[in-house]
Image (tube, rainbow over all chains, first blue to last red):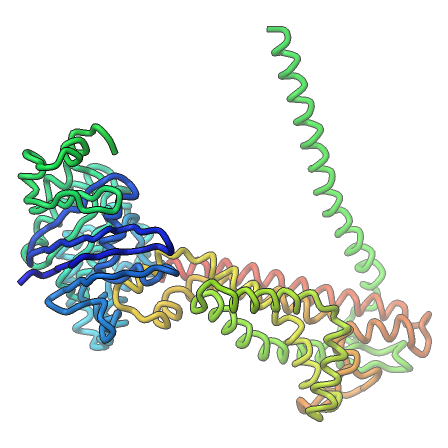
Length: 250
Length: 292
């Protein structure tokens, strides 16, 4: 069974159709990269997976998206539980104006974990998971804003991991970072693959090539091609994919 | 080449004229404020003494102090805030965090703006009709506080809304994406960030409340009452009304002129203190929010 499975997904912002008949399945513990030019629908698709698009007025969807075999757009879906299971990392690092510790503990607290010991353990584990522990262990009570952009982004990943999701969505997570921080985050994605199913939107095709197992190429709201990353980059079946990855447009 | 030089010169000259004009206008405003302040301080400072702020008025309000008016105004400020703050903040949260864009929101917004534009004397009449007569609170601190509360309600709503709007959506999204509910997001992320600005708006509206005369005219203010209120159903004196009384209809207007300036000075000092307090608190909490 696939971890994530979309069937004939059409999505509309008001009258404008942003996604056309997307069917796309992802296996557990894989990294899937979504690529394509700006406005192609890749971020929209990503945000469907944890229903963040619900926050935008006048949108609607038809089709089905299953995670662990459960239709996440079914009436009986609890959106808060869904988002707990499907974590998200955003384009710009967005830590809360709280301490480093509180940033990671927040997700645990809002999900009803009150045992201080459990919280502390999970906070530490999560920060270790993103290889940030050595850098912040002496200043856990300092503001998260004191960290560099790259550290903030890794903190945001730790924050998402703390509540133990099984899927991790990343929306251009390195677009605001310098090359060294980018390399660290990419390394991290590679390490996290064993425990999570990761979907990453990226503008950077080298990045897609480096971190992902499979790549989906979106264009004008359509899924043009979806294949093993290696195949898609070396031997694309569609001309539009060929043009895009060779930089002829987009 | 020569032509370009002329053009550059003209541009520079225009720039200088515009800049000079703006500078003049800005400084004029500051100067005007200082002139008014200086005028009141010079005229009023003579009567300021411990007795003036701690004693009852005497001799037909030409002697003694303004203690009950100060206490009355402080009570009214407190009472109106107790009403306007929770109602206004909750309304603003509802409007900014919960209601989706659409006609219900537009109507509430428009109504709030209209409420802000209603002349204060109309609030006074409304307060008298509803609180004093209909609800039978009589002329009382309660009726006056509620009337003043209604008056500043749109101010509280608007400043709170602006403060909430200033909180970037990325924080809301981060919280929601962690499985937090809307209320958790609002109470644990949005409100703490917006708090310093909400507080500032609140304290600035204290200045507004303490200076209003018309809304308290028919609802609470006593012409002369040389004792302190003991319950919320008591009448009270208040600074702006006291100022009005001893300037226009006192027993001996000439004799109480100095008292009037002294009263004005005290009123201004109260407003000034609340503004300074607003600044200090905003800075203090602004830092604290970042640290936490």
